[in-house]
Image (cartoon, rainbow, N blue to C red; front, side, top):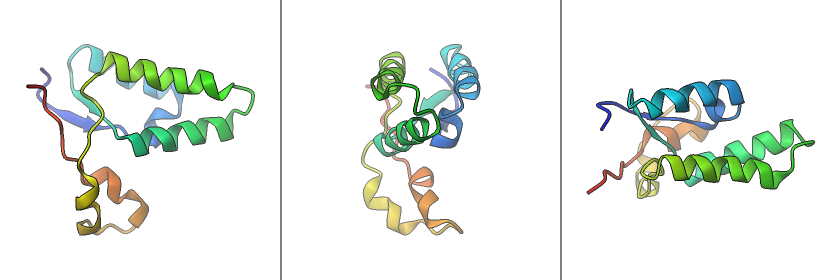
Length: 104
């Protein structure tokens, strides 16, 4: 298992070239990718807004494939910590308060 874990926010999951590069590095076990259902939903919404020509089902399939490739990437249980984080942009608090699910 990778030594480092990295939260991939929507801003790096939306651009396909950047997301592809980061996910290929994770495939090589250089780091463990993490995201939440909120991050995925934000990324899907952004892609659909930016690229209305891409069917939403195709965008959702991309993220389903990511979830299948990195089954332990989606973190849960962080929501109760969100209010404890202070950042200049309160909308970014969800990125800082991740509680990781480590495989058994």
